[in-house]
Image 1 (cartoon, rainbow, N blue to C red):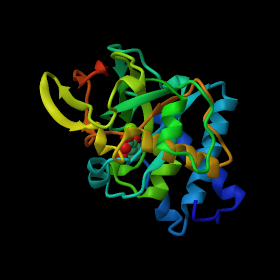
Image 2: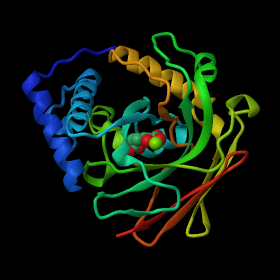
Image 3: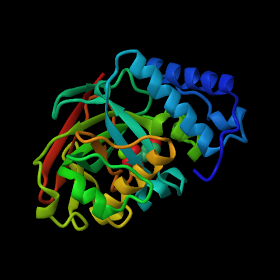
Image 4: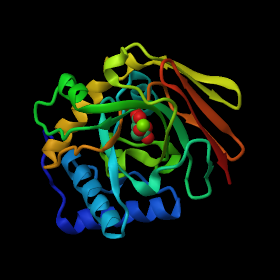
Length: 267
Ligand code: OOG
Ligand code: MG
């Protein structure tokens, strides 16, 4: 982080409780920067870190991490031009094609992403995409269901990072492949909603190569004093813009080489 923590410990706890409450009750709240216009990215990660500790203390299990805002399509859609990271827990995971409840989310959107499952630990700083590929067990296609806890799904980098980069649910599936057997840069994907094409793109949209997003994530983790352990499930970020979903919708992300992963939504 090129910034430092400016919030007091009390303010970090206060903001964490506010975000946790919004996540658990599925209510939208004002952006945190409305009350704390001077808050820095380091402050935001301090809140995210506190949120992670609280969930872990409540028995949630850390299963991995996600990179966010790593494609131009996502940056353009959200008006933010710096990538972020967020943590993933067992409570956010959903099986492929299962009915995903939406009553506990505010205004969900879906994204199609390339996910990595790590076979070796990674530690920054200085992590490169080559380091990531050497530490990757396999890759698989994923759908992320993001849900901003801020009014109108509108935020700035500082607010969204404190809200765990909008993490809500995720689904891994399709066909797992060794990264070495693929050109991870040139994978095409078509995202369909209710049988119609909603978005399409190619994996190079993610920082030129999805492994670059994982390297960036590892380097941010290093700044937070964390590393990426073997066994982690890591999402590299939405390739296309995110698509809103409501009860009754079903989506399927059809990936070249990696098969398809689907999800359906109920109230
Ligand atoms: C922030 C999270 C972005 C991605 O894949 O780009 C993200 C947001 O857009 O709400 O998960
Ligand atoms: Mg995402």
